[in-house]
Image 1 (cartoon, rainbow, N blue to C red):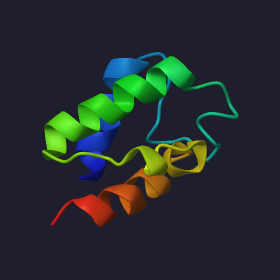
Image 2 (image 1 turned 120 degrees about the horizontal axis):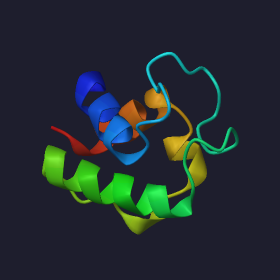
Image 3 (image 1 turned 30 degrees about the vertical axis):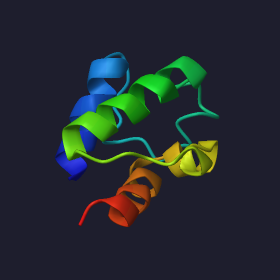
Image 4 (image 1 turned 135 degrees about the vertical axis):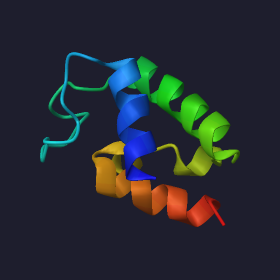
Length: 76
């Protein structure tokens, strides 16, 4: 799952190395609000889920671990 997330992030913002980043993606300027919309759409498609609007908050997309935690809620 981590590999797929990293691939999606790299497709959205290829100029950043999300694998090696320990910073908050949003606070560091690696992702903006438009990127989050693209990310949620891509995660929904790739993992065949539908992320609830109440879960679309910055802290759920701040780093790979946060995204993994969010996906674990939806992926069975």
